[in-house]
Image (cartoon, one colour):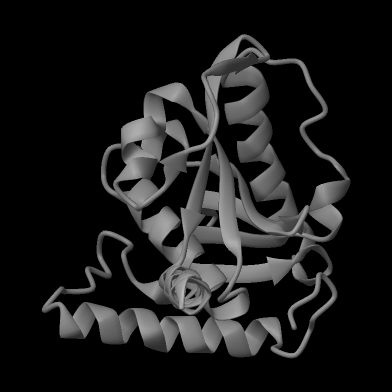
Length: 201
């Protein structure tokens, strides 16, 4: 049974497992890891707040406030208590954040939030890589959990390409159009299908 305080796997072991898993997927799909363009899994970090260095935290918060407060002209509490319990996924190249999100449990579901790619890093694949890395991490850490995301409306097709489905009508938060979307990983889909078969018998 998985709980919000389950710490059976250390962050370091999960990181190692996902790195190996991701490289294996690349090889099995005949994909090349382009280190020059920053597509190496070695650039990804998976850390709790207390594991982040002061410099790491500064870089993350600087980009978050730049995107979600300044760029979107939204005055709200950007840094919140969720940061204390979330896992922070960040892709760095030297002193630059290329992509970031945080993953945490809430109301029995895994949430992916604060999804960002800085303006100067957009349109080169970092966003798609970020979402795949986040889903790989969740598959390892929370294999039977649904994944929910609060998606900006213009990114609906992007999230649907990963298997997310709409679970709400369009709504506005801070004058920005959003949808709530849900993702069910393969293990959960198979478990639900088996349960349905057993019930029908």
